Image 1 (spheres, rainbow, N blue to C red):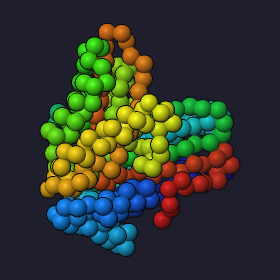
Image 2 (tube, rainbow, N blue to C red; image 1 turned 90 degrees about the horizontal axis):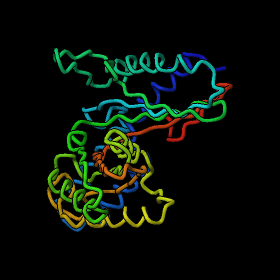
Image 3 (cartoon, rainbow, N blue to C red; image 1 turned 90 degrees about the vertical axis):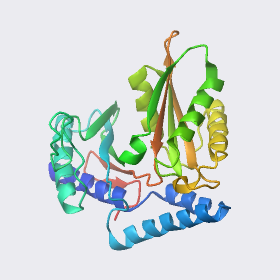
Length: 292
């Protein structure tokens, strides 16, 4: 049976899991980066990152003091009962998780500068819905730190610019960002739609597993070209030089207006925290990422 308490427990557990344990695909990518890094300084930084990850798991404490602005990406079957109550349950779970894990309070009113102290505020946490057929609720939590968030950018390009200019813009932005987004990063790119759509796509691209190839051959090729170009910048781990500036580049796109060409770039630091669970209509829970 699906109850408010059950959903709340799942959300709290997902938040705990996400800030303490990195998904296996991210840990694997970081270990591969360490093994392949030729720079002594870069290798030292990657070793420190891996030790940080291990210590967080051993002590059950967040891997980074900045537990981020929290976003939820929900996929719900239209037959799942009482969808209207889910957002209130999520907010209750966030308040509880802030106390229990704990999470750093990161919801500040931009006009009064008052911190709500519980990670709840206007449009915070951000909750994105997708309604499908069926009787289930899929919850993905995405706590994103400010160091990488501050480097995100959007440009409304000319339709005549084309993909070559898009690529140049992305590389230029990586170089401008340097070590500020705590590389090795994951880079999400959103192309097309309107300005809001492009950035939303760039953020959603960050949720794709790093070892998952894009099914569109054209985009997979473009992602690979960007990945290779970014890693040739030499920015390296934590911006101190080396072979690994990004672990992956992921691209999503939407059809655009003939007179508009928005391109968004979203940076994610090495602490690529995300966790997912599915609750079926009878209350059975399946954790897609490992539970703790």
